[in-house]
Length: 97
Image (cartoon, rainbow, N blue to C red):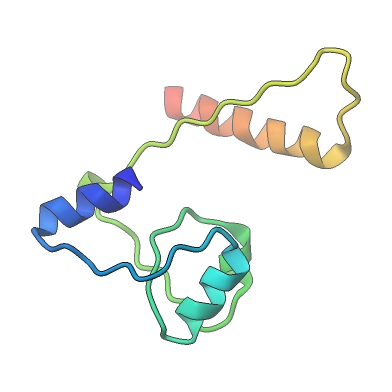
């Protein structure tokens, strides 16, 4: 929400937000049906949806998101979780470089 608020303040406009959805499929379907717009990260679900147009933010408007994860040392992580951890770790190293 902070990124949305920052862009609203910069443009000196208060957008009307009649609905909030947490389900990315619903958001993508509404946007692709020209019923709204969304501010979203590069989420794989959106990349696969037809009819969506990505408009990148200009560099000075980009927001940095911090993500943390934790798990028990004794936990048996499945392949999907291990892949997610590798991706997050790679992104973290890119930011430090």
